[in-house]
Image 1 (cartoon, helix red, strand yellow):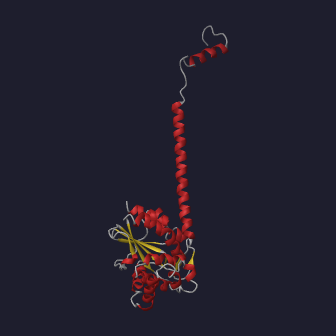
Image 2 (image 1 turned 90 degrees about the horizontal axis):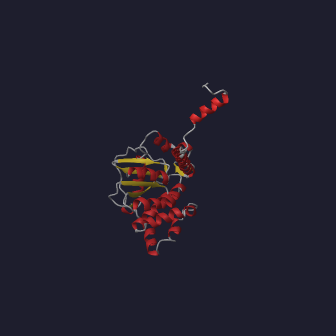
Image 3 (image 1 turned 120 degrees about the horizontal axis):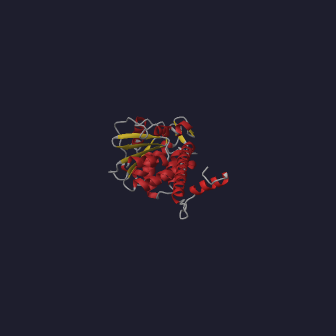
Length: 282
Protein backbone atom coordinates (compact mmCIF):
# COMPACT_ATOMS: atom_id res chain seq x y z
CA UNK A 1 0.00 0.00 0.00
CA UNK A 2 1.39 3.37 -1.05
CA UNK A 3 2.19 6.00 1.53
CA UNK A 4 -0.86 8.10 2.30
CA UNK A 5 -3.31 5.45 1.23
CA UNK A 6 -4.64 4.60 4.64
CA UNK A 7 -7.69 2.53 3.56
CA UNK A 8 -7.85 -0.53 1.33
CA UNK A 9 -10.86 1.00 -0.52
CA UNK A 10 -8.89 4.09 -1.53
CA UNK A 11 -6.00 1.92 -2.69
CA UNK A 12 -8.30 -0.10 -4.93
CA UNK A 13 -9.89 3.04 -6.39
CA UNK A 14 -6.49 4.40 -7.38
CA UNK A 15 -5.54 1.17 -9.09
CA UNK A 16 -8.85 1.08 -11.03
CA UNK A 17 -8.35 4.67 -12.17
CA UNK A 18 -5.06 3.63 -13.80
CA UNK A 19 -6.90 0.89 -15.75
CA UNK A 20 -9.67 3.14 -17.10
CA UNK A 21 -9.28 4.38 -20.71
CA UNK A 22 -8.59 7.95 -21.52
CA UNK A 23 -11.53 10.32 -21.86
CA UNK A 24 -11.23 10.31 -25.66
CA UNK A 25 -11.33 6.53 -26.09
CA UNK A 26 -14.49 4.89 -27.43
CA UNK A 27 -15.07 1.15 -28.03
CA UNK A 28 -15.29 0.05 -31.73
CA UNK A 29 -17.46 -3.07 -32.06
CA UNK A 30 -17.41 -2.95 -35.87
CA UNK A 31 -14.60 -5.44 -36.67
CA UNK A 32 -15.84 -7.93 -34.09
CA UNK A 33 -19.44 -7.71 -35.34
CA UNK A 34 -18.25 -8.13 -38.93
CA UNK A 35 -16.35 -11.28 -38.03
CA UNK A 36 -19.38 -12.68 -36.18
CA UNK A 37 -21.69 -11.95 -39.15
CA UNK A 38 -19.26 -13.58 -41.60
CA UNK A 39 -18.97 -16.70 -39.46
CA UNK A 40 -22.77 -16.89 -39.09
CA UNK A 41 -23.25 -16.42 -42.85
CA UNK A 42 -20.74 -19.17 -43.60
CA UNK A 43 -22.48 -21.54 -41.19
CA UNK A 44 -25.89 -20.85 -42.79
CA UNK A 45 -24.46 -21.36 -46.29
CA UNK A 46 -22.92 -24.71 -45.28
CA UNK A 47 -26.23 -25.83 -43.78
CA UNK A 48 -28.12 -24.83 -46.96
CA UNK A 49 -25.67 -26.69 -49.21
CA UNK A 50 -25.89 -29.79 -47.07
CA UNK A 51 -29.70 -29.63 -47.05
CA UNK A 52 -29.82 -29.26 -50.85
CA UNK A 53 -27.47 -32.21 -51.36
CA UNK A 54 -29.46 -34.45 -49.02
CA UNK A 55 -32.77 -33.37 -50.53
CA UNK A 56 -31.47 -33.96 -54.06
CA UNK A 57 -30.33 -37.47 -53.25
CA UNK A 58 -33.67 -38.32 -51.67
CA UNK A 59 -35.69 -36.80 -54.51
CA UNK A 60 -33.76 -38.62 -57.24
CA UNK A 61 -33.77 -41.88 -55.32
CA UNK A 62 -37.49 -41.52 -54.64
CA UNK A 63 -38.26 -40.87 -58.30
CA UNK A 64 -36.21 -43.84 -59.37
CA UNK A 65 -37.87 -46.12 -56.84
CA UNK A 66 -41.34 -45.03 -57.96
CA UNK A 67 -40.74 -45.30 -61.72
CA UNK A 68 -42.15 -48.55 -63.11
CA UNK A 69 -39.75 -50.78 -64.97
CA UNK A 70 -40.19 -54.03 -66.87
CA UNK A 71 -37.84 -56.98 -67.12
CA UNK A 72 -38.09 -60.48 -68.51
CA UNK A 73 -40.35 -61.59 -65.65
CA UNK A 74 -42.60 -58.71 -64.67
CA UNK A 75 -43.27 -54.99 -64.51
CA UNK A 76 -42.60 -53.70 -61.02
CA UNK A 77 -41.31 -50.89 -58.85
CA UNK A 78 -37.48 -50.97 -58.80
CA UNK A 79 -35.90 -52.28 -55.63
CA UNK A 80 -33.94 -49.82 -53.53
CA UNK A 81 -30.59 -51.33 -54.50
CA UNK A 82 -31.48 -50.89 -58.17
CA UNK A 83 -32.45 -47.28 -57.59
CA UNK A 84 -29.17 -46.45 -55.90
CA UNK A 85 -26.82 -48.58 -58.00
CA UNK A 86 -25.45 -45.72 -60.07
CA UNK A 87 -25.35 -43.40 -57.05
CA UNK A 88 -23.16 -45.97 -55.29
CA UNK A 89 -20.73 -45.80 -58.20
CA UNK A 90 -20.69 -41.99 -58.01
CA UNK A 91 -19.85 -41.99 -54.31
CA UNK A 92 -17.08 -44.52 -54.99
CA UNK A 93 -15.50 -42.32 -57.62
CA UNK A 94 -16.83 -43.80 -60.88
CA UNK A 95 -17.16 -41.37 -63.78
CA UNK A 96 -20.57 -42.69 -64.77
CA UNK A 97 -22.61 -45.75 -65.67
CA UNK A 98 -20.65 -48.95 -66.35
CA UNK A 99 -19.31 -49.58 -69.85
CA UNK A 100 -21.31 -52.16 -71.78
CA UNK A 101 -18.35 -53.82 -73.46
CA UNK A 102 -20.17 -53.95 -76.80
CA UNK A 103 -17.92 -53.42 -79.80
CA UNK A 104 -20.01 -53.59 -83.00
CA UNK A 105 -23.08 -51.33 -83.10
CA UNK A 106 -26.08 -52.08 -85.29
CA UNK A 107 -27.49 -49.23 -87.35
CA UNK A 108 -31.12 -48.12 -87.35
CA UNK A 109 -33.41 -46.59 -90.01
CA UNK A 110 -33.15 -42.83 -90.39
CA UNK A 111 -36.67 -42.30 -89.05
CA UNK A 112 -35.54 -43.62 -85.65
CA UNK A 113 -32.79 -40.99 -85.36
CA UNK A 114 -33.20 -37.37 -84.27
CA UNK A 115 -30.57 -34.69 -83.97
CA UNK A 116 -27.31 -33.71 -85.62
CA UNK A 117 -25.19 -36.53 -87.06
CA UNK A 118 -22.18 -34.62 -85.74
CA UNK A 119 -23.42 -34.51 -82.13
CA UNK A 120 -20.62 -35.52 -79.72
CA UNK A 121 -22.96 -37.81 -77.75
CA UNK A 122 -25.44 -40.44 -78.93
CA UNK A 123 -28.22 -41.42 -76.58
CA UNK A 124 -29.97 -44.71 -77.45
CA UNK A 125 -33.31 -45.30 -75.73
CA UNK A 126 -34.43 -48.94 -75.55
CA UNK A 127 -38.16 -49.33 -74.93
CA UNK A 128 -41.04 -51.78 -74.91
CA UNK A 129 -44.33 -50.22 -76.06
CA UNK A 130 -46.29 -52.05 -73.34
CA UNK A 131 -43.92 -51.01 -70.54
CA UNK A 132 -45.47 -48.32 -68.27
CA UNK A 133 -42.05 -46.92 -67.42
CA UNK A 134 -41.29 -46.47 -71.12
CA UNK A 135 -44.54 -44.56 -71.62
CA UNK A 136 -43.66 -42.33 -68.67
CA UNK A 137 -40.17 -41.74 -70.04
CA UNK A 138 -41.50 -40.62 -73.43
CA UNK A 139 -44.11 -38.41 -71.82
CA UNK A 140 -41.81 -36.70 -69.33
CA UNK A 141 -38.09 -37.07 -70.07
CA UNK A 142 -37.84 -37.27 -73.86
CA UNK A 143 -39.44 -33.84 -74.52
CA UNK A 144 -36.92 -32.24 -72.14
CA UNK A 145 -34.05 -34.12 -73.77
CA UNK A 146 -35.21 -32.94 -77.18
CA UNK A 147 -35.44 -29.30 -76.09
CA UNK A 148 -32.21 -29.08 -74.11
CA UNK A 149 -29.83 -31.42 -75.90
CA UNK A 150 -31.09 -32.73 -79.26
CA UNK A 151 -32.36 -29.49 -80.80
CA UNK A 152 -29.17 -27.72 -79.68
CA UNK A 153 -26.90 -30.20 -81.48
CA UNK A 154 -25.37 -31.64 -78.31
CA UNK A 155 -26.98 -35.10 -78.46
CA UNK A 156 -28.21 -37.45 -81.17
CA UNK A 157 -31.24 -39.43 -80.01
CA UNK A 158 -31.84 -42.98 -81.26
CA UNK A 159 -34.99 -44.95 -80.46
CA UNK A 160 -34.49 -48.72 -80.28
CA UNK A 161 -37.11 -51.46 -79.81
CA UNK A 162 -36.68 -54.00 -77.05
CA UNK A 163 -39.99 -55.92 -76.82
CA UNK A 164 -40.24 -58.29 -73.87
CA UNK A 165 -41.79 -61.75 -74.04
CA UNK A 166 -44.11 -60.94 -71.15
CA UNK A 167 -45.98 -58.32 -73.24
CA UNK A 168 -48.15 -59.96 -75.93
CA UNK A 169 -48.68 -56.83 -78.06
CA UNK A 170 -45.36 -54.97 -77.75
CA UNK A 171 -43.84 -56.49 -80.89
CA UNK A 172 -47.00 -55.70 -82.87
CA UNK A 173 -46.85 -52.12 -81.59
CA UNK A 174 -43.24 -51.87 -82.76
CA UNK A 175 -44.31 -53.18 -86.15
CA UNK A 176 -46.98 -50.47 -86.43
CA UNK A 177 -44.55 -47.76 -85.31
CA UNK A 178 -41.94 -48.84 -87.84
CA UNK A 179 -44.56 -49.02 -90.58
CA UNK A 180 -45.51 -45.44 -89.70
CA UNK A 181 -41.81 -44.60 -89.92
CA UNK A 182 -41.67 -45.98 -93.43
CA UNK A 183 -44.68 -43.76 -94.19
CA UNK A 184 -42.96 -40.68 -92.76
CA UNK A 185 -44.91 -40.44 -89.49
CA UNK A 186 -42.74 -42.30 -86.97
CA UNK A 187 -42.62 -39.69 -84.18
CA UNK A 188 -46.36 -39.08 -84.26
CA UNK A 189 -47.07 -42.81 -84.14
CA UNK A 190 -44.65 -43.43 -81.26
CA UNK A 191 -46.18 -40.68 -79.14
CA UNK A 192 -49.71 -41.91 -79.83
CA UNK A 193 -48.89 -45.55 -79.09
CA UNK A 194 -47.31 -44.66 -75.76
CA UNK A 195 -50.06 -42.15 -74.90
CA UNK A 196 -52.83 -44.71 -75.47
CA UNK A 197 -50.93 -47.65 -73.96
CA UNK A 198 -53.65 -48.58 -71.47
CA UNK A 199 -56.29 -48.68 -74.22
CA UNK A 200 -54.70 -51.01 -76.78
CA UNK A 201 -52.90 -53.13 -74.15
CA UNK A 202 -56.26 -54.74 -73.36
CA UNK A 203 -56.92 -56.13 -76.84
CA UNK A 204 -53.98 -55.22 -79.10
CA UNK A 205 -56.09 -52.88 -81.27
CA UNK A 206 -53.23 -50.55 -82.19
CA UNK A 207 -54.79 -49.89 -85.57
CA UNK A 208 -57.70 -48.08 -83.93
CA UNK A 209 -55.60 -45.68 -81.82
CA UNK A 210 -53.24 -44.84 -84.68
CA UNK A 211 -56.13 -44.11 -87.05
CA UNK A 212 -57.09 -41.31 -84.66
CA UNK A 213 -53.95 -39.30 -85.51
CA UNK A 214 -52.75 -40.51 -88.93
CA UNK A 215 -54.31 -39.32 -92.17
CA UNK A 216 -56.43 -41.96 -93.97
CA UNK A 217 -53.96 -42.38 -96.86
CA UNK A 218 -51.03 -42.72 -94.42
CA UNK A 219 -53.00 -45.19 -92.32
CA UNK A 220 -53.75 -47.26 -95.40
CA UNK A 221 -50.03 -47.50 -96.18
CA UNK A 222 -49.27 -48.44 -92.56
CA UNK A 223 -51.84 -51.23 -92.62
CA UNK A 224 -50.44 -52.59 -95.87
CA UNK A 225 -46.89 -52.65 -94.49
CA UNK A 226 -47.96 -54.27 -91.21
CA UNK A 227 -49.83 -56.99 -93.07
CA UNK A 228 -47.38 -57.80 -95.84
CA UNK A 229 -43.85 -56.39 -95.37
CA UNK A 230 -41.63 -59.32 -94.38
CA UNK A 231 -38.69 -57.04 -93.55
CA UNK A 232 -40.56 -54.67 -91.23
CA UNK A 233 -39.30 -56.52 -88.15
CA UNK A 234 -35.66 -56.43 -89.22
CA UNK A 235 -34.99 -53.30 -87.20
CA UNK A 236 -36.67 -54.84 -84.12
CA UNK A 237 -34.46 -57.92 -84.39
CA UNK A 238 -31.35 -55.75 -84.77
CA UNK A 239 -32.30 -53.50 -81.84
CA UNK A 240 -32.98 -56.50 -79.60
CA UNK A 241 -29.62 -58.03 -80.49
CA UNK A 242 -27.88 -54.74 -79.77
CA UNK A 243 -29.66 -54.44 -76.43
CA UNK A 244 -28.56 -57.93 -75.41
CA UNK A 245 -24.99 -57.14 -76.47
CA UNK A 246 -25.16 -54.04 -74.25
CA UNK A 247 -26.33 -56.12 -71.30
CA UNK A 248 -29.95 -54.91 -71.11
CA UNK A 249 -32.34 -56.85 -68.92
CA UNK A 250 -35.13 -54.33 -68.41
CA UNK A 251 -36.96 -51.42 -70.00
CA UNK A 252 -36.66 -48.53 -70.20
CA UNK A 253 -32.87 -48.50 -70.53
CA UNK A 254 -30.50 -45.98 -72.05
CA UNK A 255 -27.10 -46.51 -73.65
CA UNK A 256 -24.95 -43.40 -73.94
CA UNK A 257 -22.27 -43.56 -76.61
CA UNK A 258 -19.44 -41.02 -76.52
CA UNK A 259 -15.68 -40.92 -77.00
CA UNK A 260 -15.61 -44.46 -78.33
CA UNK A 261 -17.39 -45.99 -75.34
CA UNK A 262 -20.93 -47.18 -74.66
CA UNK A 263 -22.41 -46.83 -71.16
CA UNK A 264 -25.61 -48.49 -69.97
CA UNK A 265 -27.93 -46.61 -67.60
CA UNK A 266 -30.90 -48.33 -65.96
CA UNK A 267 -33.22 -47.42 -64.32
CA UNK A 268 -33.64 -44.18 -66.27
CA UNK A 269 -34.47 -40.78 -64.81
CA UNK A 270 -34.14 -37.34 -66.42
CA UNK A 271 -32.26 -35.96 -63.43
CA UNK A 272 -29.58 -38.62 -63.72
CA UNK A 273 -29.45 -38.31 -67.51
CA UNK A 274 -29.03 -34.55 -67.31
CA UNK A 275 -26.32 -34.79 -64.67
CA UNK A 276 -24.35 -37.35 -66.65
CA UNK A 277 -24.81 -35.59 -70.02
CA UNK A 278 -23.75 -32.22 -68.60
CA UNK A 279 -20.63 -33.77 -67.14
CA UNK A 280 -19.89 -35.61 -70.37
CA UNK A 281 -20.33 -32.48 -72.50
CA UNK A 282 -18.02 -30.27 -70.44
